[in-house]
Length: 178
Image 1 (cartoon, one colour):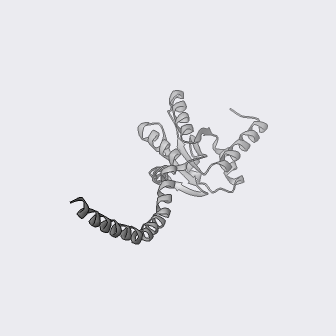
Image 2: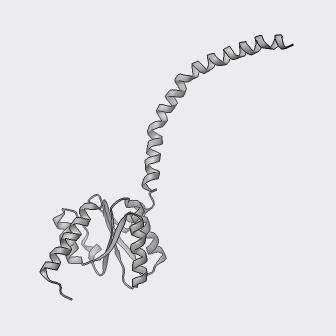
Image 3: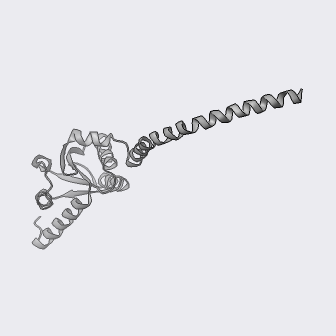
């Protein structure tokens, strides 16, 4: 079905805006997916902080070119849908790979992360990363570990002096009780 030039421009502008907002995109083939499954996938991707849309290959390739984002032509052969990761790229990639694993109709073609082309295996590797809050906590723990160790090291001589004084006080108090 042919669409008007104005509608094409509006769709192209929407694709460009999504590409600018997203940190990563996952390109998938969706042939055979019914509307209930498509809606289920859309809601799961939305929960992960992204959006899932069926795209027109020629228009999305034009949007990639306008945004100066490299892409693999093979990713846009046949039916294509894109999951845009607006918040947490690993979470969206994980949602897509888990859905593809459970469904015979969705096949991951590849993706793009920070203007770097990824293969389908790259998307699966991205999906295996821990969620963003876990990665932040791990990084924070790594950064704070030397500081807390320094505090323990500085406090140790004072603790030892206090232990010696307490031992003397306990020794002096023990004969009085007897």
